[in-house]
Image (cartoon, rainbow, N blue to C red; front, side, top):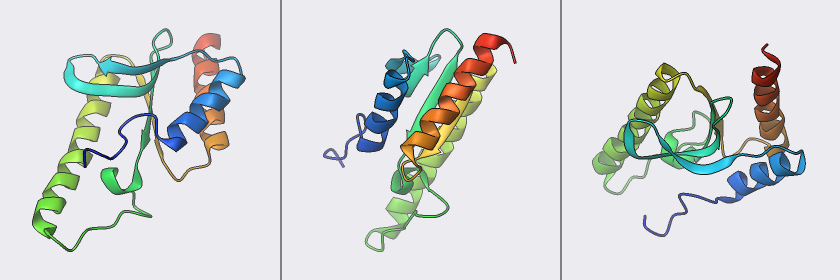
Length: 127
């Protein structure tokens, strides 16, 4: 698992490039307030928008998640903890006034970037 990329994955980089090209400036891997060792993939601190690009396997995508057969109990517990941690993180950020946007790695980067840009624009115009 140590060889698995936890940041700068290809879907994340693709979305960041599109956002940057469209003039959006953001912060990377910002710590989640009050949650040690958890980070926001792409953060817009001013409008308080947190963007997460979740891997299908690691975060339990309803379309693509698989369950390993070898050591199945351990993997089930591990993946269930990941999903639970995602919910806790979302709740924590929402309580702190952040807008949380979660996307799956298989989603089209252009669609993701457009939705993020729309959310940022909505906070800047007050809608």
